[in-house]
Image 1: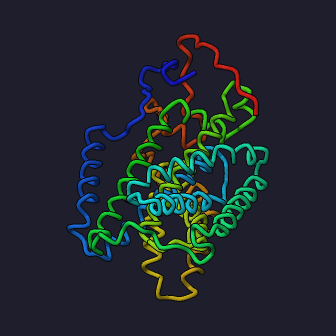
Image 2: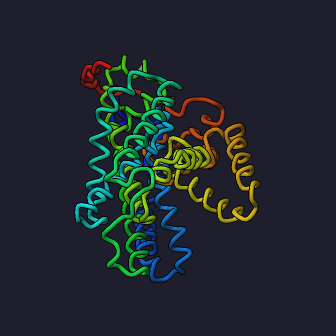
Image 3: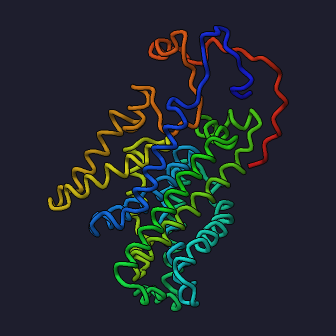
Length: 368
């Protein structure tokens, strides 16, 4: 049953998705797109570099949030696909292709590799699944590091960029990071507003109940895992261009998993805005504390522990629940007839709605 199949008992109740007029949202988005597109020409080089790294982390955090925050699959091995995306870009560049043109091909390579990996990982649940993703990442690193074509453990320089000046290369790399991040966020938003987004929410909250209701849990989880792998592959491809000397220790570094996990958890899992806000907080702390030595990591850890204890839904989750405000809503809200007061009192905001028509049966779930 969808929200269209419900009608308020009290006609003062309205069901809405967008709290901000669509025209205002589109206008604000257009301003941001124009600003970030022209940023290399209006901001200093140091700020452009920070923004480029910020967008790379936004890609990673958005994909990790899609995987863990919506599909309920907590992975600590997404650096596997970051590394594979980087080395796929290196492979195509060695074969004579422009590294920027190789980015979509690196995405395809990561998606193709992720498909058979799911048949191994989906046999596991919970912590076993998380550890298994780490094992897959380390195995991929060892395999890539043993291939002489890629320079083994010493790494390989990314060819195809020497004909670009340092300034042009910086601008092009920034634009690649920005456009990939924009595409990833928009695509994630569209996906979560679709029927699959509803299935993801049900799987995350209660997988058994979701299967019982007829949702295709396994195929949905497999699709999301492949999408997340492809997105991390895109981040790895852009990362390879931004740091043109590629080594297994850098590209398959566990640090990437830690950073995307930190940004998603601090910002708020299960929201589109949360990972973006978490990336902002991460870079603000990083730029402010980078001169404080070991205190840099201590403060990062303290912030993460504090948010996990006192705000488990993250900072954006706190803002959303307190002010009933979302920039990129993917669900519906019930407004009117004292719904806000009922919500604060712990009463479900869906109270007062009743079915208006029968709905066709949902397709049978696929086998795990």
